Amino acid sequence: MIQISMMALLALQDGLSVKEFERLHKDLQLRNKAWATLPWKYSVTEARLQAAREKKPVFMVVNTGNALGSV
Image 1 (cartoon, rainbow, N blue to C red):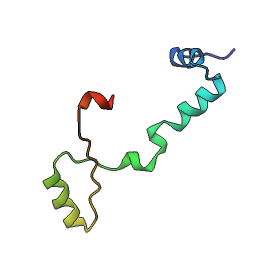
Image 2: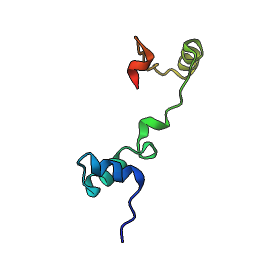
Image 3: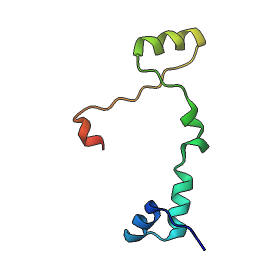
Image 4: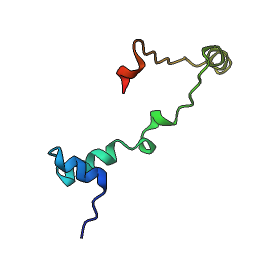
C-alpha cells in the first residue's frame, strides 16, 4: 500500500497525480542541487572582501518592492 503524505493529498485535490507529485517533490529537493550548497553572505562588504581574497565573482540577488509580494 502506498503511503500518501498530507502534501500529496492536497496536490491530488489540485489535479496532480501521485506520480506527478512524487516527481516534482523529488526535483525540488535542495540537497540535489549544486547551487544550493553555495555559501551565502548577508553583508555586501563581507562578500566583496572574500571575493577579492579568493579572486571570485560576487553573485547578488536583489528583490525590490513589497516583501509580502514575494510570498
